[in-house]
Length: 481
Image (cartoon, rainbow, N blue to C red; front, side, top):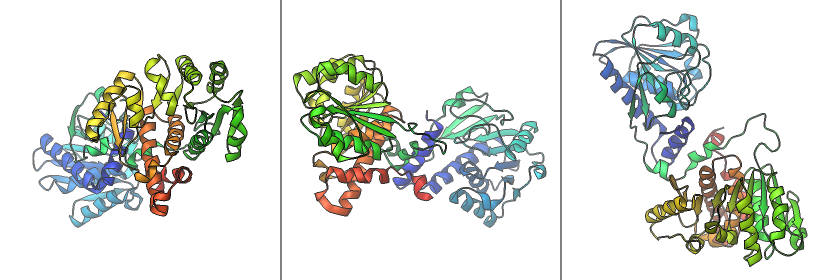
């Protein structure tokens, strides 16, 4: 079962794997045509009501494969306003095939006639809310008809995720949906058929550019809407917490604060005027600081705990004490990882070990990424937390769902790249589900390394990744604009 948003992610990932969206639409249209043949005998009259997006494009493709039927296509709107290139190409293909097709520029001109079957290809899974014209009139005429109604992917006017039917929604007799069923379809009083359209399994397994579609901003956004991150680190090291904090800003967090020992606070502040530094007494984290850190953490969406913190016994005791009392979301990295297996916490943790650190906390690894993915999944289930295990192939799992990121290169063995990853993960965990945040962070961090490698070769350094992060987090939609 996949959500409406996940459909777009898989489509884009499939395209990145060499399966063009036009090919997917061709397969979808063929599936619609097969469903028509199941519902109506050859020679029957079929009215296809098509919107101007890819859902309508599926209907346009189907029309080409129904030569044995009396087909009429009703495009809701002018052809020049079709919203995607591949749907527009399939409209043009109908003309070449001399299919009876009409543009409906005014809903009062829509006449479906008296067909035996109506194909509802108006609105797909990405649309929710009350129907507008001309779809509202088309849905009303569809529901008033005595024809059998076949909806493509989801009945127009029905929320694919919740099953909520908005006023005037299409009342389908059958739904043909693609790749996997959608959560809301179980609520329908209609037969639902799931058709494979050639999306490869790899589009779900491997994190790809489609996953960047999970990110987005409302035009009316305000400061703080996209995350406030607290980085707790430093003591033996000053660069690590600074890298994490700067990376969190570049990954889109609105505000980032660093909590570090007062002995290094001035150095950390000196790295960037964009950071807000809050210091605690001494040279490293102690149990006596936990109450103050906890109060500060409550003011943030995500805490990144561990970069440069060191492994003093008292420091690790403080880390454990904090996590046991914390109920928010935390990215746990570096030395702080050591305490995770031995604590009980209500916090949502994203743990980011490399393979050596994974073994130190009780996990197992393998040179074969498939075997490693299974091992990580099992250990994540045992821990009850999300794991992002760094390697040539990063493995991300919450114990049930496992993803793999293949971006990155050997130049990223340089120190500090893991601190960058922790910061990116912290920023994304402020706006995404934990596993999605970890997956997108792994992909973006590795992709940033690849961009830098192409520009500079193996002499890359961690600060180079920080500067590249914001560019690689642009979604495919952004790049099309």
